Amino acid sequence: QVQLVESGGGLVQPGGSLRLSCAASTNIFRLNVMAWYRQTPGKQRELVAAHPRVGSRHYADFAKGRFTISRDTAKNAVYLQMDNLKPEDTAVYYCKAEMVVDTTTENYWGQGTQVTVSS
Image (tube, rainbow, N blue to C red; front, side, top):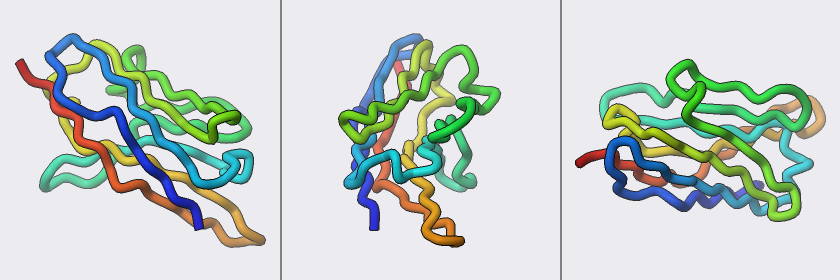
């Protein structure tokens, strides 16, 4: 079992910045992928950015050039730096971790943190 705890959400004006944090209860070297998703009411959860343990980071088109995902192995955490925020970025943001155990892929989710972009 892996617990993920997000923090850093809040209310920000358009054009502002926020940094989301996700703390994992395990050594993140064990996690193949750590990622951020977001969801708004009535819509499916969508990928924002993913940071595999090996390989290149991946961003959704709407996140490219504005959002940056990073991992801190010393703190067992993943971050999402969000700049130039827009009202359409308003959503609940979720941290996800993927771990392979033997031949089974296990997915873990945090509880989510609300981001509201409004003037």
